[in-house]
Length: 369
Image 1 (cartoon, helix red, strand yellow):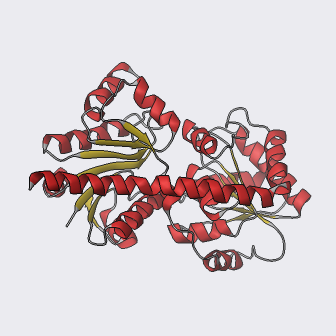
Image 2 (tube, helix red, strand yellow):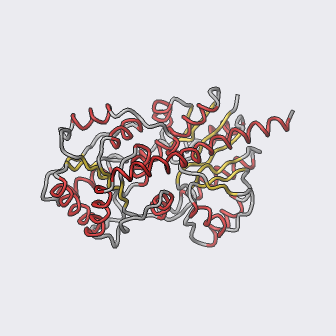
Image 3 (cartoon, one colour):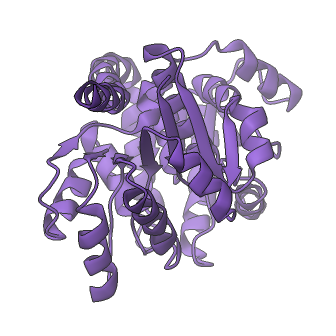
């Protein structure tokens, strides 16, 4: 039985991260139905219930060491774990888990990581020292590859794959229709989904999103539906934006599972997103999307599918967002055709992460015989 320990931002009810974990478990289990997965989680009980795997607390060093002692591989990822822009402390925590595994003799894989930015001499030196000793590195975009190169990490060779969520299977649209019906946001009108997040207390982008939502509602005679990727933080931000609108909008307040969110997004005719995995969900479900960037990971993902952001949170304008949305609406049939081909390639790359992990374990076991 192959035993894998997974380290990441799990158990905090962030829909994007939970979707990454769900996708990783799905693909690993498809390839190896007997694989044993233990997740280091901020909420082990929720992780076990949500994903059906064993979990240990991210604060319990004894449990983490116990899990690692029996592991064939530590998977660090996915997500933007190794950066110190959104959090100064988390970088050191995730590097610490990697260092612990290395010192216990457990091989480590950086799994579809979004690397950087890593700022400061000490942080960059630690990255070079600790990440330079792992056994496998895959990154989810070329920007992360460039960050690895800039850090001077030369081994093992870094492979560019894709975000784990891109390997997840599309889901039936019925669940999402039920969510919209319950919220009284169903019917014959087009539905435009909007995913937002709070960022440093900034106000400018909230006004832009509110103005954009009003324009879309009027021009397309559309229903506007705000949906949360993290509860309650995104709900509060959505309510602030909806309060600035002149037209009526629906703000969904419930916490949804990965399957529910995928199905919900699949029912949208257009999606405007600040959250990375809201955009990725749109890609998986074939929904035309427009992104507003708050972090390089947004620009990197959009670049991977031949897109650019409408702007960033500081300088975005209503006109710029509307120009992108109009283009997507007018060319939505062509977008869906092109998107299907691109996403098929990205889906294969995303699944490659799991294939590499299991291939490494098997080769290592063969060498020991």
